[in-house]
Length: 355
Length: 246
Image (cartoon, rainbow over the protein chains, first blue to last red):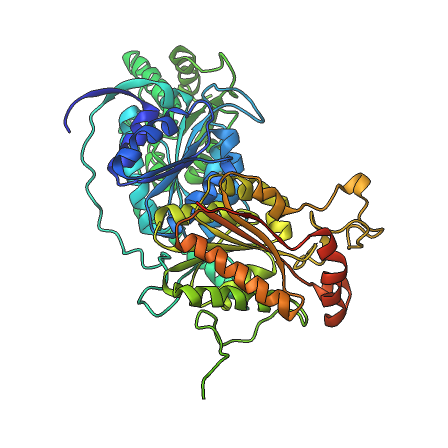
């Protein structure tokens, strides 16, 4: 499996998921992610798996809930407006402690928006887009290779913590083609899914997958149990990339496709002699709070770049507390609004001076 | 002496929380008898819906997954695709199945999913306090149709068993009632048949059960039971609407 392939980001997600043992896909077409269901509809039957093009996003997330309740590795994918429809099911999965992979290849909004790359679903992804006060695991790939790698990781983290995982990409990452070096999935040492329904069989005791807790204090205890697990994620599962940060006077932060543009701008800035680095969160939840705190012990200025009008910047500000000045540059999505490296370089020059 | 009557093994030995005169207890028993009949308790997975019936895991001694409002057929689809050899059924009320979940039930039936659906129709939203349902009869007063259902603005009661019988994927669609001993026996036979369709891998089976909701109808148990026969059956005829021989 060491061949170098030239594939689309969307295909890489599907390939990674299949390699990780995903055998159930439920989805509904929406641009710019339809390559994923198309790939799955072609490949899953060959593997003895199941592909269902559901009647709606609502139905597909609930099919995922059902398959996941049986302990199967299963996934759905969609794009922003479709993810809004899935939020009901995501909240129920979170409440029922069910794993599962949800891929969001974001497009612009609000409403119908357009199919341009956008990062305006950040709040919805990391703050609990459905009702009830929960979190899901959110991973943000910045390359076709990471689309492949992180889809495997998403399944492992999701299974380990019994929390749904979202792969948050956008139409740039989903639609672009670049080199992918596929590799074998290394099965993680994961707890047995003894909570899954299978019919009572010989267990003698029924298994119930539910989110309804009506007894005195039961729901509060359930919620504290979930929140303790979110703390464990923060302690053990934070991932980020640090690029030229050691001597940085200005720290740039961005995720996904925005980070790629930022990286080019940083290389240009370095060529000019500016000491600039990039801290790229890979896990958006859990957010790399400590990494920011550590980085800003030397660098007192942070520029947050996003393909939206400012969302992750709030988590950056919370992470650095009062130790650094945080600036923001972003543009709400729409055709022609993707910032160029030159545009970001101008912002880097501006904030490097400490304005 | 021969024992002729006993609690089905698929049913737990507990008291139900249902209101006096409510038919859920009877319908639960019939479903449990069907599971016992085919000896499938240990390989059955129930999908609980929203409303009074969500607590079915407290009464049926089987594995259960809880579904969001109206989505039980989608959840059950996911379950059945993983466990093809298991028996999977949903148990849904009329607000759940005929309003918010219309899309899910129609498409699960149309795909011919190997599921059994028990649809309890009491012409109202029970747990939320007796609001108008898609099955509320013309002129019927509810807390959100205080002047009686006006078909001019509220539309007509939906006949789900007839509707689903039209779909190619539906193998068995029937409407029964539990308002008399004769009808209870008939309902029991229909529910057994519906499970039988699944046991034999013959496709999607659907049983609509007319049922009383004395509390929300503002009636005592006997009056409510009488209403099922006097008012509901004339609008929702008891019949087999489809019985596939495939």
